[in-house]
Image (cartoon, rainbow, N blue to C red):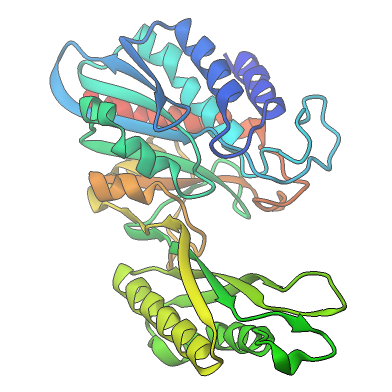
Length: 376
């Protein structure tokens, strides 16, 4: 079915939609699933999510295979026959390929259903903004399909195609977005002393946030604070600003380090605002827990890869990027593994990235191996 799956991937690529707005993408997924008659389909799960349930003939474990529906707010800059049709949105992380791999399991499960337990194919919304997995779990209908095990993959440029990348324990970092808003008072630009500009406070905040890991985390505690955006006042040459905003991303591997670093950010913002006579408010956004692979589940990935004679790479350190699949590995044992997309393949989130169709078959076979091991 490789030609059919490739055409399906191209259709999904063309239909790229932003996080939380994946309505058409979900329609395409739903229509394809209908052809293989799952025992149950749950739509609009945690937003536009879809769960397709394939039940076994005997009691057994519930297995969740998860992929992502959403694309990125990145324009399509390469010429493709199946290029994204919506301006400024494209699948530059490969979620179109991930969906296609999981959809490729539907005919497999219809032809040979699980012997015991059940398999749930989950198409999750809003992964890129760190909200989709949590919304799915919070949906009351998730309790009806709550899994005993969960698995997912992510394609990884920089590794040879078809290589399997897996490690026990921490696989991907936790991250959270910080927004600090400062409020003073505007004045005429000729008389800034008659207002209270947040300019110097914002500059100090940018510098101090960037320095936090140096002073508040140990050498053995990986952490990073990256200032990603700032805004001071408006474009009005006659006005001294009265408001400012600074945004940063915090990353750690361990949750206790994240909490400590977050607390220091709050202390820092409050101290700088107070010293400058400014009001302030804090908002957290796009919070991703660390993805932690269960040792037995990671071992199962390696076992399946060995049976397929695939090269296996076990990185020494976790990846610095974040994935909201960590919400599922916090819920039940599971594992996220990488599937090599090519050593010289454009990086994830790069404008010239496109998912390599050659690795679809490998992804389907890896998941099929996991399913047969756990459900027969």
